[in-house]
Image (cartoon, rainbow, N blue to C red; front, side):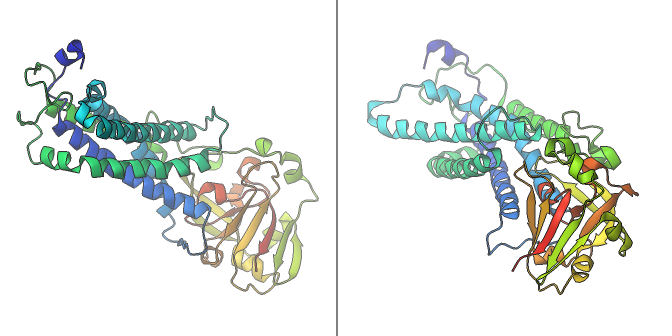
Length: 385
């Protein structure tokens, strides 16, 4: 290690700090992996996957947790890197050259994957995409790389972690992780307890700064939250009618919603839908970016609308939007949600007709689903065989 770097080593750069920061990071990354894979399965369900309609707030919690914990990882990652980075400049012995080279390569993969996930995730919460790849697919694939790298790193470092945790974080006997072969290295600098406390406080602070977009009661103290939870009719909007290029078709006097059930087909105007029995549902919109807001929706129960056309046979139901330019122009609703009394073809929000940006003339609203699957500007509904 360069002498000047050795002279600056603090006792806080120790296996005690590195191990504890690493454990917190590992726990956080595990939460991110589980909640992220869950969100992917909900949006792209395989045949074996089942997701309940209740509690209606469950996806709101899991995705809010995913985004908030992701932000909370930033201070922990910085402290972890600060504690261990001098090791990258230590010249390996010839006897351990190959093992150390392999270890450093695995650590490089771990750092790169975690940084990639955090940075792209932050950009996604702000809906800023300065890249050409599709975020959702890439973020999902890199989740396996990051989590796998964590497991490999844990397997390699488990003996070191066990030894470090067997002593108090403030114990002087824990050798500096920066240079295990430099017993005369200066000990001046911040203490380990100070570093760990700062990491914990910083993590909680940034978490509080963004959690308000998921927990409305805290939105006044969440200064860094990309969304306040407020918007037209009390609900934020991700995609406008203008961006979806549906302004004219949604406002057309000739608009009809086509419903196909059991081989039968019927077209409903908005007036036809409004003439059917109307029901209210209090349901959240929970977006993959982490924000969520509760809306008071009114409209026709989906199961009643299907029954008005034909006999519903228990299959999944596809919803197709007037939008033809986006990747979320359709969605499929499973049987559990189709039969739920709170699932509506909504016509009103907050006691008023839907605004154009909220899905006028009608939209799907169902419990415990990502916002991207709550299809707006409905063109057709069809039971799948």
